Length: 253
Picture 1: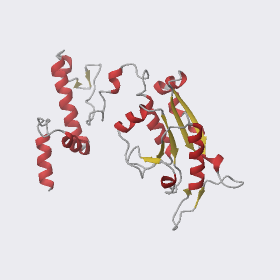
Picture 2: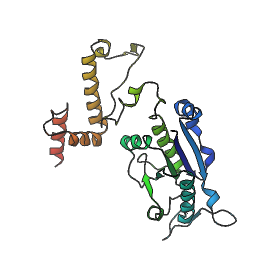
Picture 3: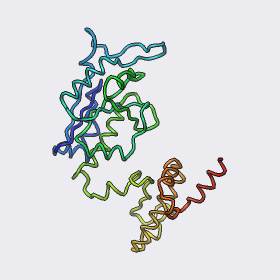
Picture 4: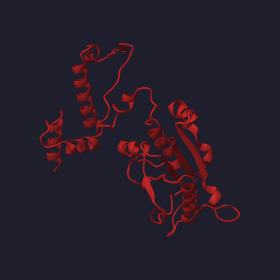
């Protein structure tokens, strides 16, 4: 069954954009997934199709109106029944690879793109809309975030990636960052490839990759490392560096 995506946006011309090339573009052309847009302006108010108004309580900027948003969501749901509606907003919880996998395993998604100062909060009470943030940054609108989320989902669809393990041995899949990669040339400006990767000993290579995934996660993403330690059963042997993390926690306390 074709995985379906619909994007509610003020700028439908931004799609498919990057999703029309490379893996996602080929999958779109082959019918692995389908993409449509819902123009938010079509549901605007009055002769000028207004979609926003000044924020209650004062302040800069404009806010997308809840009645406009609700009509657009209702229309998208009517055209694509059964799809979850996800609002791209920095006020939502941060997206995870687990959430992406769950979406990719479903029938698709309707993505609601914010603009200006954001959306009237009442849309989340009036309609079943899930807020989601792709990163702890603020963008000009939700379209770029929607493209990122769709790309993350589409690449996981069956047949999109050439090698199935490509979607498994990656950052976040096991709670850790992925190990580093190397290729030719063997030496570049005095920097070589780790000897173990040229040894042909697959057990040693796997151990090295696991150790680097752990050490890099601990160094670059301590939040992921702490979560990884918490998820380990008490009887499991501590991963490399776990004792150091415990010592750091003790110092912080």
